Image (cartoon, rainbow, N blue to C red; front, side):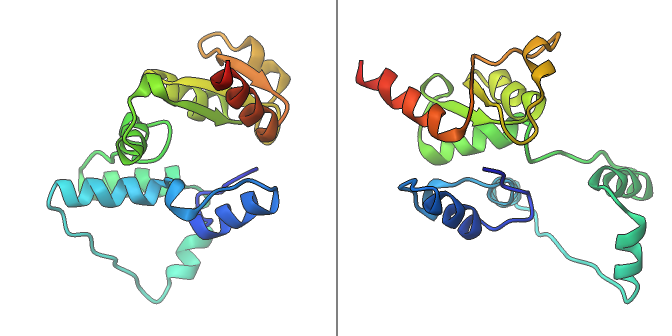
Length: 165
């Protein structure tokens, strides 16, 4: 089940509910929440600046990396990544749930950003063989998932079975 960064938590939860998962919006953590927490914790006040040619600029900037690079260069600053694989994202999600890293298991399809990011924070991580997964992921030289499953339902069933033992 993919959750593109531009999808709302409501849409993501609705998608999971259609797959028969019993989940509510307050159980989903997003990069936007992590960013809001960082801004509040640091006493920062964000501003949104746009101009008439914003659509034209969006066509030129085809990736967030390009936008971040341009902003860093123009402002002579270093951008801070808030989404995965940044530790601050996983730490914020764990704090929001009130759990320690060793109490959490990440289920994701992106080996480096999902699995690798979670493992760097001390979490266990399972990779699903859907979405961004590629068979070569299982032979990656630096990131190794703690387990591999065919889909999200299989991962959840396996975790619940393990907890019941």
